[in-house]
Image (cartoon, rainbow, N blue to C red; front, side, top):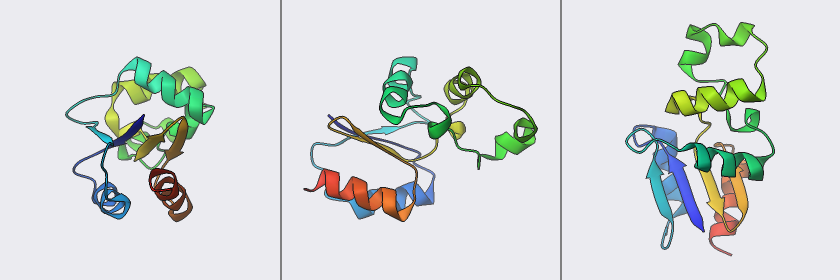
Length: 117
């Protein structure tokens, strides 16, 4: 399975999607209009190793809610991601049992190589 979870209004996601083209056979899920499900998040966590690795500490709500001052547990990370799409580190790219999370150059390059061997 090849799938990319992204945010349509995010310029970084748009740039990365362009960079990863062609996206033949890749399912795109825009997480604002089609929120991720608990099953999808659990699948991501199984591949990444933790909910914290999927959590965006750069989200504006992270500071607005004072979450940066709290000790969050894995359950907290999971619940927050399910509650609001902005807490998912983007994009999340799944390629045949591999997961690539975030927008670092290294991550995007590795995803590109997995998508286009």
